[in-house]
Length: 94
Image 1 (tube, rainbow, N blue to C red):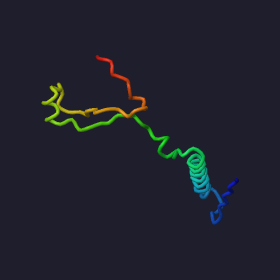
Image 2 (cartoon, helix red, strand yellow):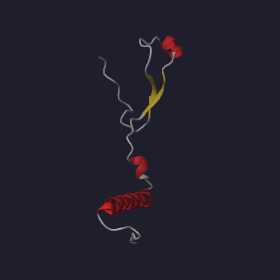
Image 3 (cartoon, rainbow, N blue to C red):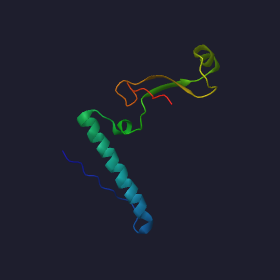
Image 4 (tube, helix red, strand yellow):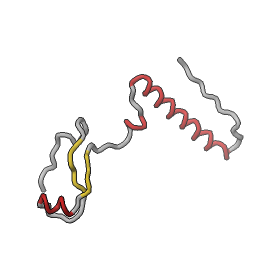
């Protein structure tokens, strides 16, 4: 199957070159994502996002007291996402 995209109604000259380039990039990205979604089920808008693989929670006074944490502010990691880069790895002390 082939898809051909034809743009019209753009003006001519230097002032339109950027608009044409951006439209072409938008179509290329959209069609690449459509192809990926149809062939593999992977939505590239999600698959290409940065992903740490952690499950963060607010570090509040109750948690600090309950767990004897030696800081007053920060982010508390409750777990990791299975299969992510963070899963199964432990921070080295120090």
